[in-house]
Image 1: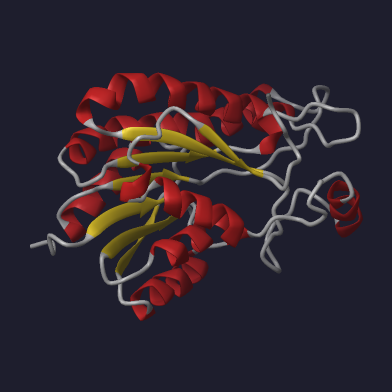
Image 2 (image 1 turned 90 degrees about the vertical axis):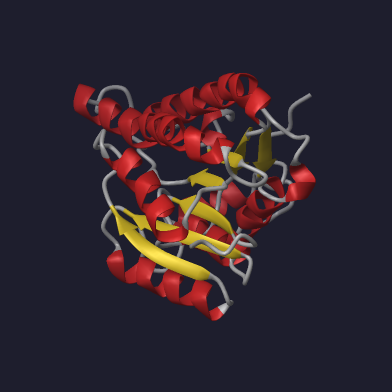
Length: 255
């Protein structure tokens, strides 16, 4: 049986970067985490070990969230392994910088399915379990590319479309799920430093140019984003829902 003192989290795209940092930020004796990755088993195993070293429970799960059945399978795995689900953090995704001329129908569909479609299916599958959970939370990890459209910044048409759709769904679900006590929010990272050896949307020179446009004068760290997620899934954030929290060093400032 699941320890009633533990809250259970499903974190997707958790083998590196932001997802891995989220798992580390949540790790502790009072938390169990299903660490998901599409294919990076080695990276996910390192994260599982880190969660366990911090006193938490952790298991690894594999699956391509663009496949329609994987979301339901992951939720079921969390329930079977830990006895419940209290936190869904939909982080898995990728950046596609293709311009309109190079952006094929298949590439656009791939972005939408891997980001927006995955979040939709995860939320739909998770709601029954979350409704019975403790301080239930849904967090979608979005991106500044859905908000910053300027000639001095990189533009990601496919990724921006998928992330913007995800944020719209966050707001709709926040209203629909409020009676069940489930809060639904988005985290909007800015330009975040990548782990060494992992795919990066920017070359070092491009990253330096982007840094020059960030008011706080540095790239964000995965731990910066993870700290915001840890707050939003905490009991203290129980009166916050339908919001998009920007963690970007001031890159996007909205009225």
